[in-house]
Length: 137
Length: 385
Image (cartoon, rainbow over all chains, first blue to last red):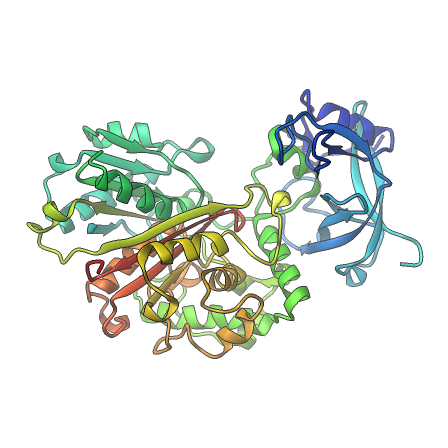
């Protein structure tokens, strides 16, 4: 397991399955059985119709929708990693998720870059989804 | 209508804590309005966030206001435009007659400029609620705005030079404000040469960090007639929200200003051409650009070329942030208060060397969070027709 000093999610009864799935290398979003709406982050209702959402396992592929390059950040774990990329990734399934784009020269990151999820195990019940460019991007 | 304004001390006020900023601004606003403190029967404040001791209910006690109307709406920096919206309705409805709105922050003296930490100061800090989905990735406040700028550049070809023009124009006004924290004139090249904080935003695309506080007093038309200042009328006000946490922004190239702006201006019965002064939340240069487009001053996507035409400059068609703005004068955390106080100063004709000639209509647009909650207030020196 990675020694993770960055902030850690505190799983609750809605988020626990999301983090646990990521620990197993699976990316979940929610899908509404009533109206078909898909959403991230996980919630206790469908934001469109208020029904109870269900889990949908994703392919873990998407493209960078927007991003920034953080060059100044004081929190432990990040301070020594600047510069790094924070992105919103638009999944093939539709919803957008936040993550870091890793394993790439920052100058090569751009909107539209095809990326794939990678999961960092940080606790027994928590995996953190991250993003790496698809080979031959 | 607004009959009193007051500012505490800025940009550096180590002699004041946050509560004392509220109090000093309140005392000055009461004196400016020419009312007795006992006239106040309404109180509004957005304080109390992040464990601060200036929450509305505590402040109402400290100030000892016997209110029959209280509002603690907190939408970040835009809170005070929402307060104008709420108070205009409350006063119209008779819920209260004379209300005080206050704000205070000792941000610079208490915490300094320092490196942003997103509030996460401990290693392995546990994070609950919606923030748990963002905190592991180390985004910052600047980063959230940078993501908007990056998308806007991608969709519309907006450039760093165009954003820099906004900072340059605001700095010119700051150079004329003896209290402004940054007063040296700057050029577009200076902005581009300043270091990147979060690409594509440079240091000079970012607001200052200061101390400061402000207050304003609203009352009925009947009560205003007996008071010394020419009243400033609230012609219209509206607010809207797209998200709070940045990952939930639905469209990073527009904002809730596209909803709140037209609604407030329709409510006011005015169009873009009627406006003499813009007070736009300039937490970052991109904030201004997106507010301009949302409000309809520039067509969507064309804000960049539009600002390069110089409209926002001193002597331009829509002078903006004549006090020097958050970019260069005063930004203690929630700047929306100063959009109102500066607009009132201009509409009274009391703005001295930066007075906008024949200033009758001002649009104040606050942005709270990460371009999340936008509040718009249209103020005028003339009664609604």
